[in-house]
Each structure stands twice: as C-alpha cells, then as structure tokens.
Image (cartoon, rainbow, N blue to C red):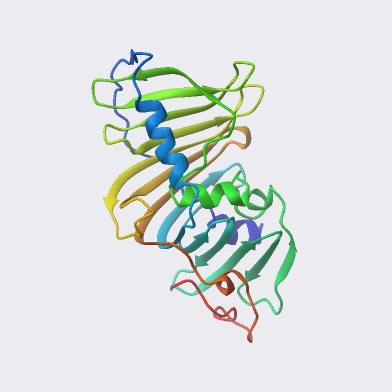
Length: 271
C-alpha cells in the first residue's frame, strides 16, 4: 500500500472534476463536410514526429484503494519514454518511476537500491492506479494521442457552440473511438473502446494556452487533462502549472543510477 500511495500520485496526468455545462443538441453533419477527416489527419500528423515534454503539475487520483493529491514533475518523450517524480510535502522527491524501452525502474525515498524489471502493459495500474500502457500515457500527456489504424469515420455531428464530434468504426462496424473537437479544431475529448464495445478509457482536454514549441508541434497545450478508467473504477486529473514542449530530451534522463541514500539519490531529476 505504501508504494501505491507514493506512486499513486504518479502517472495520472489527468482526471475528473470540471464544471459541467448543459450541452447543446447535436445536429448530423453533412456527409461531404471535410472537417472530421481534416482534423483527424492533423492529429495523426502531430502524433508522428519526435516530441517531448517537461512539466510540473498537480495530480489527483481516485481509485477503489487509493485517493491522493500531490505535485509531480514529469518528463515524457516518444516513443514510450516516461519519468514521473512524486514530490513530498516539502518539495523533496518521494518516489520516481522511469519507463523506457522494455524496462522500468522504481525508486522510493530512503531505499538503498532501485527496483527494476520488464515493462508490462499494466505497470502503471500496478504502481500508480492509471489504466494505460506506458506508450498511451506518453501520447496523452503530450496531448497528441495516436489514432488507431484501420478505422473509418462514422456518425459525425456538430453543435451550435462549434464543437464537432464523430465515431470511428472497425471493419465489422463496431465503434472503437469517439472524438470531439472544439470550434478551433483542438482535441477536446477522446474515448477508446474494446472490440466488444466496452469503454476502456476516456480523456478530456481543457484550458488550452499558448506555449512555445518547435515548428512540428502545436503552439497550444491543454493545461488540464482528465482521465476516466471505467473498467477499474478509477479517475485521474492533471492540472499543469509549467510546461516545456520540445522535440527531444536526453536519453539518460530516463535511466536512474543510485548515488547515496535520501530523496535526491537518483541523479538527473526532471527540472
């Protein structure tokens, strides 16, 4: 339980708790309207090039066996590299999780050695109560999720406030993704379903603000991201406080080496 509490603060960069608004009634979108395919193409293009992020955020997690709110420092980079530092009450490092390639490392304050192992799809759930594979978490934290391949747009609609939504179906007609974009073409919501139509997770992106970034990356970033994991009854919320969107980060940032004991033992903390 200590590990779940310390790391539970970890990777949930997302969550719940935005003010509700009464949605306007949707209207079917004309079949010839190019926006669904255009905005999906932009998202797919942004999900391809190298991208990385350093950030500070306040993270809240709620799961059947964990309720936690704690500040974190985050560093993520494609493909699938991740570093999450959980901070204590006085800003000291309480725990660090690093994932890269096929391996992970876990450090907890006061430990004399690192915990290491083979990276599995359920690692983030086991240590942080986040029901995402590490690569999915990286793309969602970057605000640039990768659309599933081989799906077709269906059921598009629009609302008077400018929001536009649509589903994507597989070859058998089963809905696998649901998207909502705002009037500016920014991703507002994404829901992913399994082959039986059950929701795996949903993400909501709020509070877009301008950020400096390389030309290949968007110049706006969602400073609040909300995640819901219905199959495990979990939720997470991330409120970003500082964001640095870059093309790449040093590879050794995602590798821990223990240098003495104490909260600062692993070197190269994400600044």
